[in-house]
Image 1 (cartoon, one colour):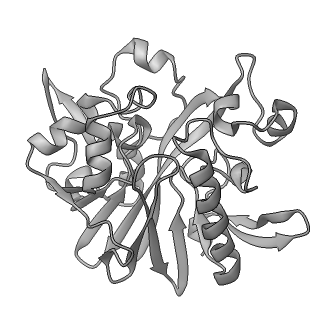
Image 2: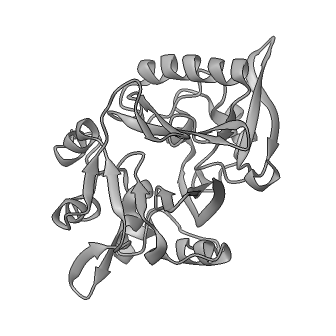
Length: 279
């Protein structure tokens, strides 16, 4: 198995929303805000080469929305999904599987492209993977979350016939070295890949812990649907990461790709940070 970092660029989100009840005087030292109170975040996907399968985990925000939509998020940076794939010698047509941790627009937007006036899968040879609990949650969104579930990102996947569902069981696996953890604090049945790689366990954090700045247990996003559930999920998973020396891979940290954790007098904190390629 081989793992490749796939950078798709940066965007901006409100710092207060990203850090919830944590005061700005604290979080601004972690990820400084601009004059509009916006912080920069990565959209970092992961490519898994597993035998004859080439699995892309999440797809970034994509480019099919209109200028008004993108004006809210200040996309910047030189990285794109296609450039990142090409850097490692791949093309989007090589992708065999698209594994979607959840269906918020910054994770699934790149899954669909606009071809003239038609919305079609960006990865024509791939099977797209979600799970039924999350899919039903996304296509029938609550009023608070519906702005994150855009039908143009989601429904064309099903209409294409390329969508399959993963069983939401405690023993779920995508392949022998690719297990799945389900968490529901951020959104219903978000999937966290746990991948065995070079004798280490790499946990793709998605939006459970979007950055190293969110490692302290109370640092929970205001975007989370069920913050106390997130709190308990973080306690369990980050505690396991300390005990088992898991490598955490961050989707949104603007600087750090990976870290390990340690127990300190102040609670669980970052032990060391590094790039995936350094494993």
